[in-house]
Image 1: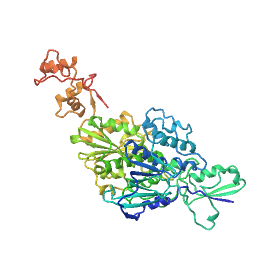
Image 2 (image 1 turned 135 degrees about the vertical axis):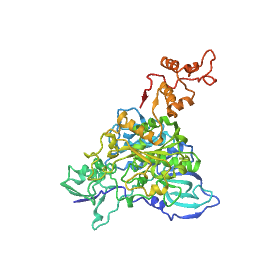
Image 3 (image 1 turned 45 degrees about the horizontal axis):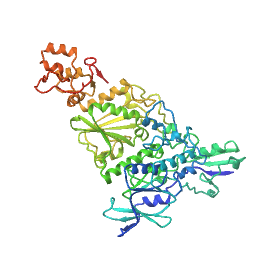
Image 4 (image 1 turned 90 degrees about the vertical axis):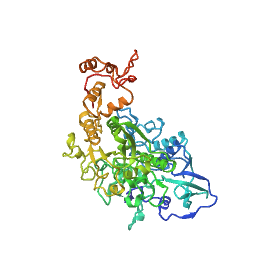
Length: 597
């Protein structure tokens, strides 16, 4: 009888990661002269390390990646043992939007080069691991990333220095005894240390990392497999046709990914999700910075402690976005570069949110972890849109982004309902909300939730928020009713309720008007909608029409009102004695008092 310990490949972190994250990391006074210095050191040239290298390179930063193997992605040269990935490669989505398509591409890294999409490397829905090795090799080579191969970092110490960014430097010593000094250390070494089992007879077990992949070696045998995760089922499937019987044993019941909505649980018959959280992942802050050493950040699979069993941060399609968030945090902390944002007039608020919830991949993949933030300007005339901020750092927004939240804010988060995850849960249970906007808060499938705050929440409010709430209690909250295809574009079911919610929060009218409607609005209301106000501020007036001419004659307006928006050839002036407003019309009139959703 064969006994296989296939409970999980990824066990406790490796020696380097454990040592580097320990609060009692060795401290030494800074020498007068030291080894060559780099601002950023990245450990590991796997997907996370290469992704961070890409962002650092694009920003023009001084960095180096240290990789012990002769090529990137060395993990995938061995694992999964049977060479089939569980990360999907859906090449056809019916849409041409590149950002949307990343929702269904779980293998590509983020870059500006469309050639570096995984769809060009494999046509299989579950690709071969060898294709991932080839892809990562090309990613590093084509982008010219600075990777030092065949370099094993064997020792890490801290040197105190008040002039250093974080109060100390990291001193990395490689296998040749060469030292490297870094201001920031980014650990992307993964979690590839096998689980160690300890029970009477455990010395006779064979681990997943070394068990034969040749079914003939198990022919006619009775096999006990310890564990019922993806690696266990992957192994069982491989030998199913040649054994007498296979028995699988684990401490917990089987957790199926389709029921828990957690990609690391049992999916097909593939790769393992690993052991217990406390033994597997290092403890890091919501910023992915070590709790023990300032300036040390954890990337990739090991960063999954922030969202373990909640979101996709332990997998490429999740940590490619958290790596970008870490880079943006570092850009502001050390280089004074504010978090990227786009400023728009408030009349575009509804359309900006609708676009993001229907297209954005990072918001979609890292649901409940990364959220978009809308910062309102004074008098709610305009807004700044920030993408994919770590939601648990909301209270620190001004400090970490360089942006100001003085006049209220909206947070756009993607959430499941409370009955979505667990072996006994059913995300599609019969009582959920499936289309009635008044019951949208009961939506159980993934859907957008918009929080409105008059003031930025405090750290205490974030820390002591209500149980099962992703964020502190807001001034107002709006759920967009779930859609099975995650398509929130229905004019009446999705967009209209969202617009009305935003209008109620801002006490304004966010509709888009035709030019004549703005004109008539000005005659009957003291406050114009933002859409109309912004048109006049851009000196975009009205185009004269027959209906406006009649309206002028009936109301006996001065002659100048008939030609607002056109410069009179005879040099006539406007109603206040000034020149008539030049430029194109606000909108070509079509039907008086008509509005758009």
